[in-house]
Image (cartoon, rainbow, N blue to C red; front, side, top):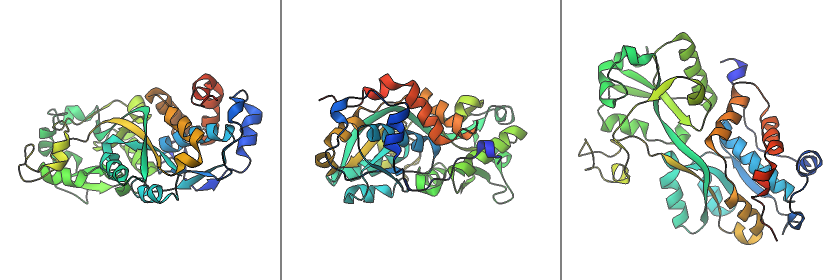
Length: 328
């Protein structure tokens, strides 16, 4: 993968002095009543392993820093981060997707230690995707029933004669292995090690017009800039994941597509008393798919440094983010 498509490697960092820098450049004018935080304890925001989540998190972090809070960014696995949120070692996570994190969120909220802070405004979709040129080679698509007829089209030396489905990192969840078994698909799931590797392989295949079936998600630049389509599986219902008798396979769950819908913010319940204004600001956070996809494309495709993309959005959207800050 060329550098222009590389997703940055993320590291847990403390941006010492970032609040002062931001305040001195483009963030002047926020409500003065919130310039003094309730405590000097740092707010710890999680960084997961895809560009969009870091962008969302650093936008929120920049606003919290303008309010006077110290913010730490902590690298954390997408699903494993709930343990840190329950213990209070982590404060908040900005992107829990209904597509892959719904069950984990519900279980965490049931403990009383994790709080649902509401939707981000982003609308999530992530499922099996193929480039438009593949439709001529497998004319039954996008119907999932066509996959077995075309399995060899997607095969690789490691999977032949079975097809190859390129999934996301194992830490993302998604139940693709269970889906293949439940629907009787002649495919093997090969998981990418990172988001960057997933996107790189999709781009390489697309540029060579090679058949590929892979995990693609939105909001993201890829479905905005590339011509393709998602496979149409049986429509998700909660019963599909919870009741094996549901659907085409009476003996197994996951015989449907993935859910799609909201992306939520979550936080350690105990933090509400420590940083009440910050929690209200996080609840107020809203971003659109177009904003997110555009920012991700600037970083992953155009090569803009991630923080520069975040700073540019904050500079150009003052009215939006200032409306998140609670007034006294």
